[in-house]
Structures are given as structure tokens and as C-alpha cells.
Image 1 (spheres, chains in turn green, brown):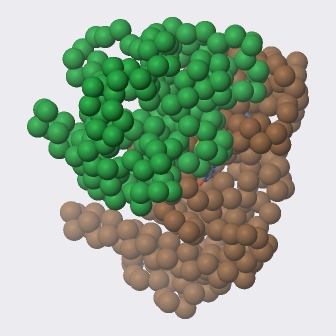
Image 2 (cartoon, rainbow over the protein chains, first blue to last red):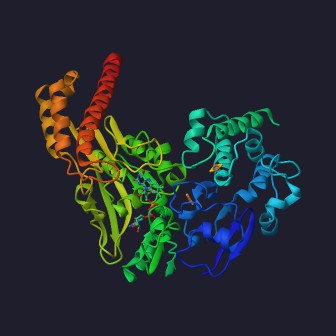
Image 3 (cartoon, rainbow over the protein chains, first blue to last red):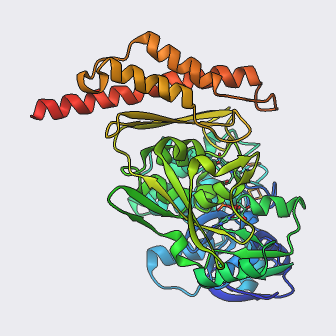
Length: 190
Length: 297
Ligand SMILES: Cc1cc2nc3c(=O)[nH]c(=O)nc-3n(C[C@H](O)[C@H](O)[C@H](O)COP(=O)(O)OP(=O)(O)OC[C@H]3O[C@@H](n4cnc5c(N)ncnc54)[C@H](O)[C@@H]3O)c2cc1C
Ligand code: FES
Ligand code: FES
């Protein structure tokens, strides 16, 4: 079947979608957006977290057909999404730009220099919250949504908001630091 | 596989009548796991996401009519006053991502003995509103809904429209045993609701019998003990021996198994502990509320 939906602010179409396929599979394998990770395919790890009509969900548990006509934001579109939120209307991220995201603007993945990053992405880099990086996309999407909803979260709020995202490397402390850092920068308007 | 996308409730019932083997999919948090792992290959998936009324609720005089697909997040955030037991139970489900998608209709559809909504629904008192194109609507009392391990009273052509849950008329609690605070399926769970309006106590036990169950003998014992001692009127602390007897009867209502999450013996023991705790907590709130109203009078 064919699925028409909005991905990172632009209309997209996926063809030859199998009816039992997940939104995660469509994003990764049909649209070429591998940012959302597939670690468990059973809702346990959160590495596939995307926004569906603004709401954080595990894309591995959304049937592709359920995304028809709806609005999806993935980690590839997070920087544009965050910019639009603070600066008003924008044009979203084209599929091409999203697919090439890693290379976009020659971003240095160790420092974040040279690329357009969402504040939460820069904070993860600055706080050293990324080790193997497999959990990072899901954590970024979930953390960004938390800070949108609750600009000044307590530690308990952060833990709760990220309780559906597993990380096997960091021990979470640096991730907590990153979210606190992004919150502080957001409130200072930097 | 075919993907059916009814745009209205009538269309959904018609599709289910035409394809009784179609598997409804709401939040997908149970269904998609089965499909991803190839445990299930239904001929038809029946997507309920476009049926708007399933995502809505109405609070009436005595009950809340909770649409089958209202996500746990909304129950936690918006229905805490009317449905405190269910709101507490909802908060223990999985993670924010799962709670944003999953709801009570899916929990009832799966009818796992470990489903967190069940003990809260049993304790509050509820009826499940189901419908079919051929026979219209019928109401299934929650006590008659669970018919076996992961089995429920739905007919193949029926869908769950809503759950009618009694609005809280007194304190309610929900307690769950697991290895961490998020992302755990209950080792066992216990829901308790005080109903001062009818001077009754209701319970619900999860994950400690083939189906979710009430501890009926424990309820009967406690109802009689509270009545005899005039506790609803005098608001005294319930006699420890009565609390213990209640807890023992709750443990006796279990019919658990040994599995990876816990042994039968542990489950029985833990249900007794949860019963004692939730009774103590709810009774304390009842006494506090009484003191406040009396103080104001
Ligand atoms: C990682 C993870 C953790 C979880 N943790 C918990 C937990 O802590 N506690 C808990 O209780 N559950 C848990 N679950 C299970 C699941 O989230 C719940 O059972 C949830 O309530 C299912 O709701 P849903 O809308 O996603 O159901 P779906 O997956 O869409 O459907 C579940 C079943 O109900 C049927 N169904 C759905 N809607 C209807 C309807 N309107 N009429 C008739 N049948 C219908 C479906 O056909 C299917 O058989 C967890 C799941 C995952 C993936
Ligand atoms: S891949 Fe979706 S939650 Fe793990
Ligand atoms: S950084 Fe490796 S899993 Fe989180």
C-alpha cells in the first residue's frame, strides 16, 4: 500500500509498504532516514522515538498505515523543528537534506561545529552525553519534547520523561546533565 | 494482509462484521509487538485511530464514559479526580511513549492478567460498552469480562466502544510490585477503592491468578467488620486484627503461578502486603476527609 504523510514538515510518500510494517521501518528503509534506531522493536528501549502529531511515540509500535495523513518529526528534522519553534514559521527539512543530515554543513560530530544543531543536540555534545550514540536520537526527541512542554524541569521530571529510553553506555548522569544544560541555556535565551 | 481504515464508528462495526477475524489496532502497543516478532499474521488489521469518538470521554453524574482509545497519559493528567485508582494505575504503565499510545480498550482487548487497568476497574466498578453491527450495544459488567488467560467476553463481530467507570466517591489506591519504577509488567498488583456512599470496599488483584480477580471474601469480611464496628461513622482506625484478616483473605483469593517474574508464594505474600498498605492509606485519607468536613461544620 501507499502511505502519504508529513515528515519533518514536508509531504512524503512511501510506496510498496507492507500492511504489517511499522512506521520505523518505513522511515528507515523506505524513506532512507536511519536516524531513528531499531534496537528492540517492542517498545522497550525508546531508540525509535519520533513525534507523531507532536506526541512522542515509539515508531516501532505505530503501524505504517496509522501514520497516513499525520505529522511525523524525526531526529533528522529536530534542528529545523527547534528553530521553527523559537523563530516562527519555517519550511521543514527536505528528504534529501534529512538523508544527508550527517554531512550537512560539515558538522563535526565531536564538537557540533559547522552544522545546524538543535539546542538539545548541542547540549548532548557539550555535556558528553553521547558514547556509542545508539540511544541518542530517541533521547534527543524525548528531551526536546520535555523542554518544549516544561522549560524548567526538576530532576524527577527529567527522569520520568526519559524513563522510556534506555542507554547501555552512559549511566544516564551525563544525559541528565545535558538536559539540565539545555534547560538552563533555554531559560537564558542563548 | 489488508489494512482497513474505517473513518467512523459505524464503518468500524461494519468492517468487523464483514471480517470477524480482523484484528483491531488502537495504540498498537500490544498488536505491533506481536506482528514485529511474527507471533501474529492477521489477515486484516482494523485501524481504530481515525474513529474520533474512541479518543473522547464524558463525565456524567455517576460515571465516566471513557472512550476505548483514550491514552493513559490523558487518564493520568485529566481524570485524576474522577478516576483516581485508574489514574494511578495508568501512571505505572510502561513509559511516556507507551502511555501516549496505549489505552484501556487495548488493555481489555488483550485481557492479560498483568494488565494494569484491570485491578483499578474491578475496584472502582465498571461496565464495558461493546457493540456489533448486527446486535447493537450491550454492557458487560467488568466482573464478567475476563473469561480466561488473555480471554475476554467479546464476540468476534464486536468492538469495545467505551468503559463506564463509577466516579470515585471515596479514596482509591493502586499498588504494583516490579523491579523498577518504569517499564515493568507487574509481578503482582492490587487496587482498592473505598465506597463510602454504599459503605463498601472493592478490590482488584492483578497478575496473581489466570484472570484479574476481586477478593470477594475479603471484601465481604471487611464490609461486615466496618459496619459492625460503626467505622464509617466513627472514623476510627481499623482494628489491626481486622486489617490482617483482610490481607490474609486477599492473599487467599490469589491463584498464582511461578514464572520468570516471581514465584506463586511471593505473589501471594506480596498481595497480602499490598492489601494491608492500600487499606491503611485509603482509610487514612477517608479519616482525613471526615475530619476536614467535620472541622468545617
Ligand atoms: C514496552 C511495553 C511495556 C508495557 N507495559 C505495560 C504495563 O506496564 N502495564 C500494562 O498494563 N500494559 C503494558 N503494556 C501492554 C500495552 O501497552 C497495554 O496492554 C495497552 O493498554 C494496550 O493498548 P493499545 O491501545 O496499544 O492496544 P493495541 O495493541 O492496539 O490492542 C491490544 C488488543 O486489544 C484489541 N483492541 C484494541 N482496541 C479495541 C477495541 N476498541 N475493541 C476491541 N478490541 C480492541 C486489539 O485487537 C488487540 O488484541 C506494555 C507494552 C509495551 C510494548
Ligand atoms: S526499537 Fe522501538 S522502542 Fe526499541
Ligand atoms: S550512548 Fe550507547 S546506548 Fe546510550
